[in-house]
Image (cartoon, rainbow, N blue to C red; front, side, top):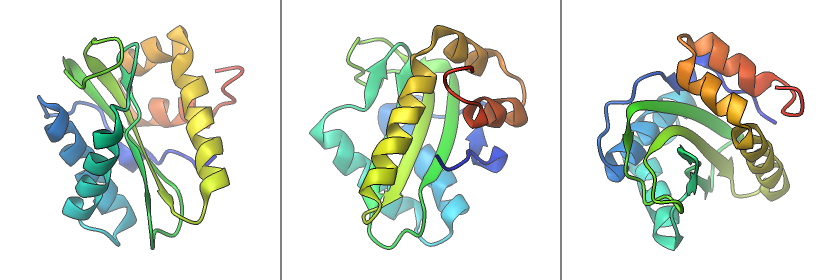
Length: 150
């Protein structure tokens, strides 16, 4: 799985709405990849959300999409201390966001990364730590650890 760079982490998101959260994450991703504008990435995320919410429950959302012309899989993380109504499947607010963008040509790696992120976020202890960590380095390290032992 590609790593989560500490510069791709927002410790305290400013967004108060689902669209705001997607835009804030798209802006972060745009600065990380440098090839696409915030607007282009936002539209990809919005299009994916129109299929169904990526709010997976337990305070977690994994907005994701595939982009033609992206070189490698990109992971970004955002945390909302206030929580955001994201139309999650359990109707609860979302506090933890993991954005996953993938080149259209890397379907297998994309699915593997999505599964690994899901495995990390399924564990109560990991979600609790992600809410409590005070540094980007701690968050990046949790995603770098083996999800079986994290």
